[in-house]
Image (tube, rainbow, N blue to C red; front, side, top):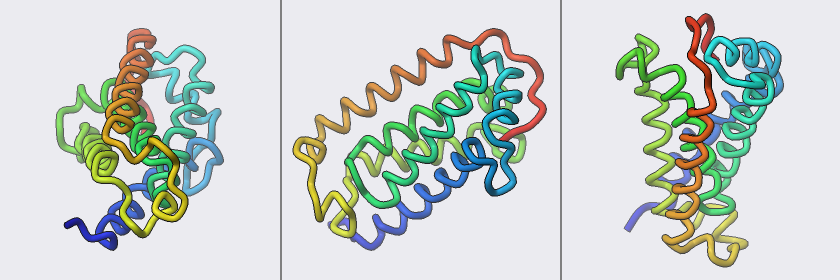
Length: 171
């Protein structure tokens, strides 16, 4: 049986880590440059409407991270995380190889895989979902649907990009 305390620790570490990245994009907190600064960076990656996509990425990280951290709404937080990490990997990190020290996809893959596992394992008894369950979200089918939708959205967003320019700054 999976320990609810272990799930809580995993949710907090991954969820709050991603929420801080989202807050950099949305609010400029923790050394981030906010929507306009991140939007300028997204423009170099070939995103149309780069400020809008920076805000969407920030919302995905911030909301997905907070939902995961508190264990609320089942697989929706993990699906948001997986979506943003897929787009990040395909748009920026994949050409740099695996390792994070080279700007590779190691960290986004770790975040996405942890979110995937938590989507299927569930948040445990130390969560909002355990206190106030939402009908249907605790079923494995809900996780499959949420993750599938997140992957599809991530692929569509990635396909919308124009040829990227050289990256200048990561957030």
